[in-house]
Length: 434
Image (cartoon, rainbow, N blue to C red; front, side, top):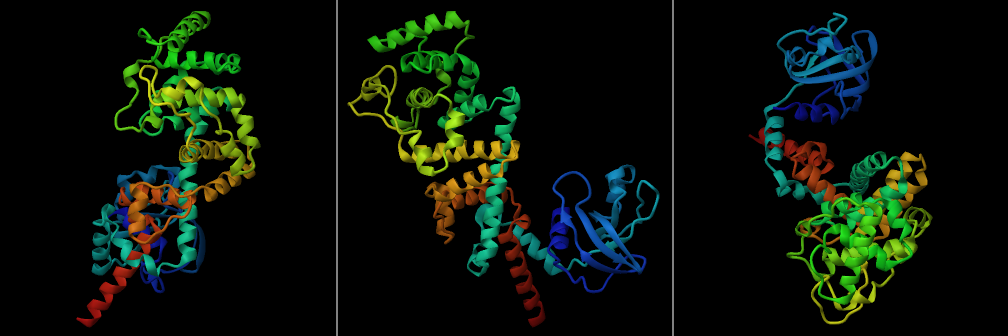
């Protein structure tokens, strides 16, 4: 038995709460069970509970054993002085607050059927045994859960963007540049792209944004692709230009070429192609931040990436080997991936930091109008008849899989809660039959 299980029992009232009493015999009437607290402090905040003849407003703390209160040293912590009820599975002693006042204790009536149900759902793992009840879940209930998952996912992504913002001396332009660079490298080359972005001052890049040749010299040089002898005229010119710019700006050492991943990739996803696309994006857009903030439609956002690469890339996927001639464009699926992984988190972070809700709403609007992603996680959900018609839904399902199913956080999931209730009722019915 875990505290997480007890939190679930209390939060969702999975017990008979019509005739509750404290360990010393006082009646308990719960008017509000409180708000679940995921941060430090008591487990449930702002509960409203009548104990005996007195109505209390405060917090609820939950433990497996009552003595865990002392083990966790809550009697020394002032934030626990607001606790009005101590909820436990096993009562082995009374406990006191920092002010030495005894805290009323209630013992949760945990039945063998509840424990068995909990054991079954805990054993689910990522097998998603709860899929058996998907068809019975209320559509509104599902949609509210998906909404919460999307917000949760993009708040986490936005936190990373805001961390960059603080490290970049509160520069939105540098933050935007780094965020898009990371997305261009997704998934295998995200870290090298971030290192490349860190290695070049955006002020230097901006000075040469008018010249695609100088941009490619700077970025390919810093990426480590111009360190060895080049075998064609254009790449030799890039190398010479980079050497000039490196000395002019006293650039730090370039990255090592070996850190870039090429294996098991389609040629269009090679890091050399992605760096060339980064150069073209800077060249065609200049101030990325202002362009992104001005885009009020998905179509305008997609047009930011509607460019072809320098004609050298018509016959190359790398700086060395030639290939059959074909003009290189960013595919629409790649554009959508960049929007999902960079631009939407950036808009979310910008809206949060600047207290401008319209940018967060716009980010979610874009997400709803981008087609669903197609990967193994989404295919698994669709195999369980949970359909994904947009990136909004696919991002929710990815969050659900990664942060709940894989982590076995079933009791914090709406689907898991419905399944827990279902197997609990089934177990109780079987016991009555026997």
